[in-house]
Amino acid sequence: MALRTLDSLGSLAGKRVIVRVDFNVPLKDGVITDDGRVRAALPTLNHLINQGARVIACSHLGRPDGAPDAKFSLAPVAQRLSELLGKPVAFARDTVGESAQDAVAALEDGDVAVIENLRFNPGETAKDDAQRRAFAEELAQLGDVLVSDGFGVVHRKQASVYDLAEILPSAAGYLIEKEVDVLDRLTENPERPYAVVLGGSKVSDKLGVIAHLLPRADKILVGGGMLFTFLAAQGFPVGKSLLESDQIETVRGYMEAAKERGVELILPVDAVMAESFGPDAAHVVAPADALEETAFGADGLGLDIGPETAKLFADAIRSSRTVFWNGPMGVFEMPAFAEGTRVVAKALTDVEGLSVVGGGDSAAAVRQLGFADSDFGHISTGGGASLEFLEGKKLPGLEVLGWSA
Ligand code: ADP
Ligand code: MG
Picture 1 (tube, helix red, strand yellow):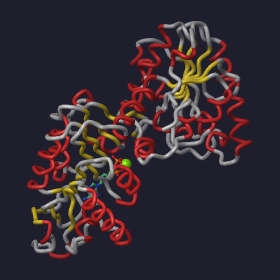
Picture 2 (tube, helix red, strand yellow; picture 1 turned 60 degrees about the vertical axis):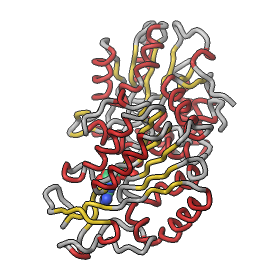
Picture 3 (cartoon, protein in one colour; picture 1 turned 180 degrees about the horizontal axis):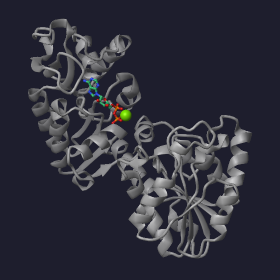
């Protein structure tokens, strides 16, 4: 079944429209370090403003403990949103209390208010259905309809994501619509060849995606911290590199399955081995089957794919028509170990077809390395949500909007 989209709500002029966005931006000392998620909400917000709706934006930020906590206030985000929209944005000091009610009552057509962090209320994330529902009922008092556009939280059964969408007339905003459209193209009839590039820190985080995409992809490329579990599965020693010994058997199973299905599993042929974990650590390139034969011996740790691997990966990516990439190839936060990630990102920008970057750290990596969002077909705003979508799981925040995979 299809997602209910904005048009299904009819004219929204003069209506109080609650927009559930994902303003969960990274903050450092109260300053937003990456406003990508605020920008991602702009198409929907601008559309509603132009229609003359009275817009009430709500979001979570961080993980406050169900109570107000100044360091997780959405105030800096409301300020940034005002700059990006080029118009005043009212800010309510609470979520469903007097301040929120006053802010909503003061809205005129085309105005915008942001209410305080949803997670300052224990009901938002409550496991207890009744408690969650009660908070959603309070939220529902603020608006006439709900536009759900926080893709990053659609895998969560939370009050503003799920219950509120049941209580009020609701539909997906443009961001969710686009995310679903793109991710669906990665699971249903992708244009071939289709390459899936996986990295990041832990194999165990990505097992579901590997299992679901393995039968669908033509090539699977493995880098990042998880590559060492794949090398260990082949019997190669990996020194002090990230290794999940309890996943070796599972990984062997994937290697078998790939062989049986004729899926090309492309594993690293070399890696950058470092003396220690730090930006200035001494490091050398070693072949995949001789990682412990460097000056650092069995104490070395692998912090990036090597140059041969990067080239192999780049060729496999460029010759594909659909590419999904999740997880940095190395510890990109340190420039000495960012080269593999940079080469892979560059290759994705050359793909003729659909290239998709998913995952919070992967999105941060491409921006940090100087790529523009427009260099890629799509950068998913949802880490966990996009992975669960690609695992074929049912996502409560999408199902409630009419979607079924
Ligand atoms: P995403 O958020 O894109 O899904 P992950 O959260 O799975 O990605 O992984 C990101 C992290 O993986 C980064 O912080 C990066 O430093 C780390 N990482 C990548 N390669 C390695 C490695 N070889 N050793 C340790 N950590 C690594
Ligand atoms: Mg991450």
